[in-house]
Length: 134
Image 1 (cartoon, rainbow, N blue to C red):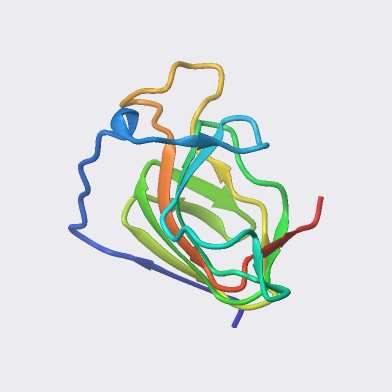
Image 2: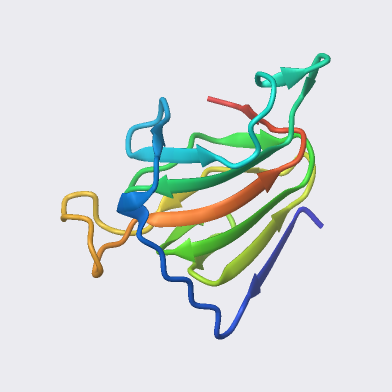
């Protein structure tokens, strides 16, 4: 099985994302906070594990990528869609090694970001990192 999804009923997270020190990525509308700082992208020639908070503005996302090992995701606010469907706040997802997907935040990029059109904020742990395919 390449993918698992579980909705956690009753999970509610309150956060002030504007108060966090987000860093821009090379992907428009996508910001992140590295929660597991360490040496460069690779340690001893191997991709390092990545533990991050990610914020994707409505309609933005990451290009298609392959997981070099297991990736686990907990959606804290908003949601995204990928080849497996739509995933919303409170969803826990597990992508197995060698699985691929293209996550795009739900919402309307033409409207202002806010309560009716939230950014997708997620906590992710990607063991071994990812390989961008585009």
